[in-house]
Length: 213
Image (cartoon, rainbow, N blue to C red; front, side, top):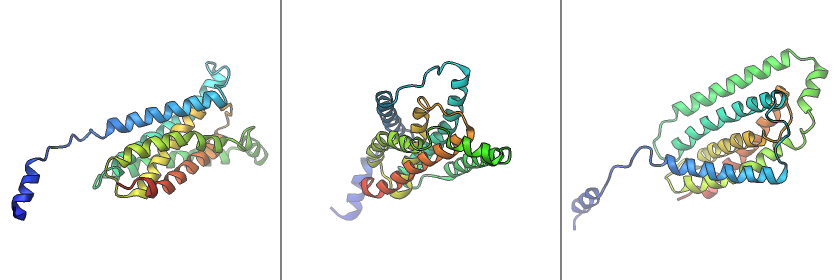
């Protein structure tokens, strides 16, 4: 069989791939990873008391909004990086928008606080453990997402790993907020961001090693 016939025979068997076919495995992986992280949180630290009251619920909603926004943006990045030649403009612009909002909020907090008051608010009562716990809770999510993305066709492995780490850290921060009693916006912006950054670094490191196909 000459080359032309071989190519034609291969093309005859091609079937169009549904554009959203890769989304379902990603969502399944996100659900499994989140569920595992939630079980870990319940086993290790439990849920904070009185979460159904305004003093606890409102800070939780703020943390969930920050983490949820980042997770949504990062998931768009994972979808783009999981396959070659996918557009990234939406991912980058949305990530820049979330970063800009967080930066403006941080500047406003610093500008409106005294030095002593800001220092107390930044440290809170759990600064030693907050970021590390978020990074720890992100690990099941990272593992689940890497497993699924590896079965697709990523070519920018480091960038895909970074998007996976960002998503996992952001989702883990929402889960961790169930047990975190800190209510200071400056604390959340600093230590939650550090935890998410640590998860992003882990994903960036693991991507080239485990996303090869």
